Image 1 (cartoon, helix red, strand yellow):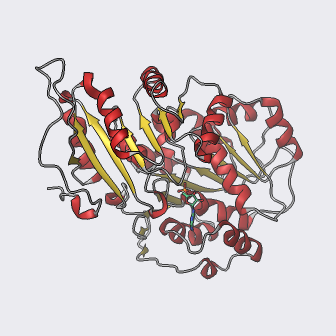
Image 2 (cartoon, rainbow, N blue to C red):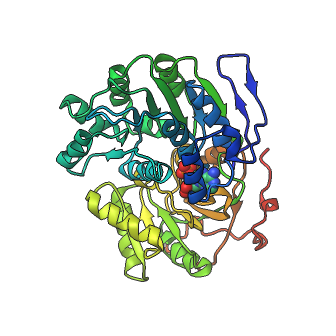
Length: 421
Ligand code: AMP
């Protein structure tokens, strides 16, 4: 989990070493304390310790935190604590924008979990699921709406969602929303929201584009900086294989055979590749599933349910859908295709090692992909450890085969990392 350091972006106040041993110090309502106990949340995570008090003071906050750090509850708790009981048809009080349907369902689930025994209702609105049933739910009056930007705009345009009662807007995984082209939609939505609202922005990275967005649409935001050098959790061991393209499938099989992961995600770059690797694995082993953008929403939800229940233990996924996955028992991440964007690496690997659990990540690097590896290592400020599995001779001898440096010790202790120069 990242260190709990928070800094003020545009005020001299610097918040340091926040360490809270219990949620009691926030003086939360009895109902919320009960919901936290029931959820098994004993003490706040670093991002919660930093963000909750600021949000309760109604400040705008930029929380730099990756998923798996408890960031969802860090904005859900203060929202629920400040909601007015009375629901207004079509007029929610809080709007949470997220990049993917899966994340919308997850955040909605967290709202429902933490609103236990309280009269608060939440709706998840996203494309690929019937507009009319979402409209009916909004009509009944919900306190919180969690949605993807495209579908939220549809509702705004058709008048089935109105912004007058909104006092809080959350941009969750803001960097991802910008990456996948939601910037115009987000800006359109923010322009329709009351100016005196509170805005909370959560993002694994805070590049200039996010800062520009914050400057334009947030009021004197405080940056809660959860140590970017620790974006890839310390509990995740990270390795790479140097492998010829035509040996990657064989390497994948051997690696799975050697590791027998409890639950793993195999990330591929494209939908077509994802489907091919899924077929390849499903023909050879049990409990394999896939999730990518070409699937219907119900097929995606079905796969995720099976993955969560452990009926699927090996999930082949693309980045876009892989990003929102929050399943606590994922032991292995396999980057079958190395991500070209460093942030995608951070997000993929962040699917494991959640809330301090141990995890391991393997990245397959083709001979001409060294530059991607280097930029990932620079981004996470760590060198990946080279690993080796004997695959025999490649069919194209000019390509590099799996290298054979001394095999690292089997212990997955942190000391296996070489420190970056
Ligand atoms: P998130 O980063 O919001 O995706 O949360 C990651 C996981 O941590 C989720 O499964 C949450 O239910 C769980 N979680 C969040 N806050 C806490 C907490 N304070 N204590 C224990 N688990 C938590």
